[in-house]
Amino acid sequence: KLDPRDLRIKSLLAESLWAKDEKEEALQHLVSVCLETPAFDLGWERLYHWSRELKKGYLAEKTARDFVKAKPYHPRGPYRLAQQLCDQENILEGLEWIEKGI
Image (tube, rainbow, N blue to C red; front, top):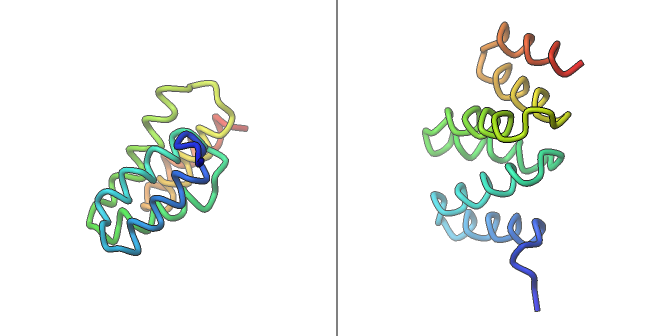
């Protein structure tokens, strides 16, 4: 039996929901996966693109900020937030987060 806590299963669920055009629910699952797995590059990349496709571009940045707030000492936090900020043309704040992470 599949373990619903397995992040690979959660990610696959998000992809499947997206493919079935259940995009809002897919996005919710993907946010959960990204918050639990900051090293999951593909998940964060999908979150960026999927949220923009649904006109919720703020969601990737919000998720990264939530992660940094929940786990302020996690080494991936500043990187993920900087990545989202730089992608959204908030370059100056993104650079500040890069410097915090170095």
